[in-house]
Image (cartoon, each protein chain N blue to C red):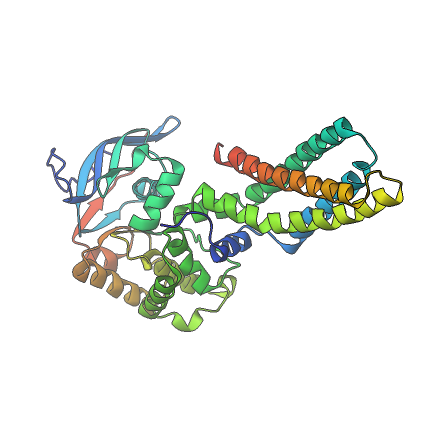
Length: 161
Length: 233
């Protein structure tokens, strides 16, 4: 008995739940927009401002991904019932949604953070390349953790109903 | 609905003897009482047909055996395990390994191919890839739809979908098969194939089969026939 959600199973489930290219695009573009803004702004403010900004990123991205995952589950409630009738668990269903979204979220936030870092430097951000790189990493980490928390929360809300 | 046939009256639950044990089960929807103090056991390897008019609660009973509906009171043991106390996830794992279900309403995933649909329960049962492919090939061959394995389910006829449902229910060789009006959507030839498979699985593999039906051919095949009456309010 292996743990986790194997790749092939995750792909099958994601297709079953109609997690489509447009869903991937929504996640990637939102992540890019948030990360670009944050990576630029984080270079222009002090440590307390940076911490506050990362907290804001975490909360807003978590809320967004929670809403997206809840929407996927709500649109596919009959499919979920059908999958459960043949043995699907909430862990396998949540895992499928998470793994089908997280790659696009990380890719979007990486691209956005890169653009934002360049913009921040151009706008006179202090600290140079190392500081910009740390800022980018911080933004990517905060948004990835938020996406994971959001998908988990969306699933919890669905399974507890 | 206490008139439901009693298969075994033994009060002592002999471990390993029964596939399903229904203990003082009642089921109601709001004010409407469907079953009252239902109490019986199904021996392992039995083939039981449940007949009765529409709305008499046949599907409800089958769904309770599958853990898809919970009784209002009482206990149901399936293969010795109390499914009325299992969590949703616990039931999922249990179903994946123990129960093959062919519901009356199609529950296949229309976007996936025949092969992918049949493979799904094996993923949930954590069967490794090599055994998954072997089992899927075997059951598709057995049901006679191997040639359709790459077709997307939404392009199949109702009868073909029913055959895929059979294949999916049987793919993990569960000890219990639950079937809700299985021959209803099938042409005579397809129905013969399925009846032959059920007969073979019951006789040679000792699989417990519980089926709701209006089809005389199915009741003729069954070892026991239970009759439910519609409760008059």
